[in-house]
Length: 115
Length: 115
Image (cartoon, rainbow over the protein chains, first blue to last red):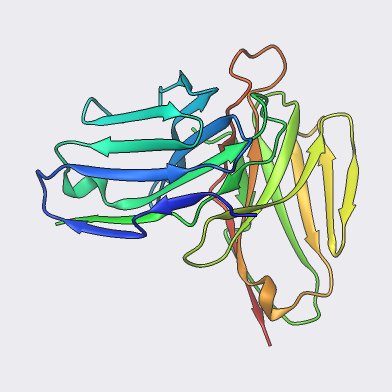
């Protein structure tokens, strides 16, 4: 079975540009999570969805970040306008149910560099 | 602040030796999970231990949980070079929390197994 699929794997862009990261969760999973990983701050939860509905977006840094999940098989994380401090690896993960007891399955991430 | 904190931050051992990593957390939990991250890849779920369990095994992995001390340990026996990775503990929001889907990750232990 295919795991969580993220695209692109790498993105290099100039500050001020709009960046869109994409995620396809595992079929049948109804919870989806967006994380950001940096050396300084470790792995941070940005937002998570359950049944396509945002449940907790308290980790979204600021209004420049937005996330959508239009259907059960697709989610986007958008940064507009991007800034150099947004450079990080962004992970998407999915799991079954809405309980933390369920293991999360991670994609291989998008490595984002903002120049 | 992080819920889970791993100790040590880095560990270097010879192949065949055992590796022990520790995790401490601050608040009550429903369960604790351990994940592995290979360089350039997403996190992979290893094992989940519930708050009413004290020890769990999976292959060469042994996890213990002491809820009175709010700590957990991950033991990898007979380590192999392929075990070289970062290892993270993750805890949920705990009983009574409405935020049941959220996991909070520690900063991780970087394990190097030398051939």
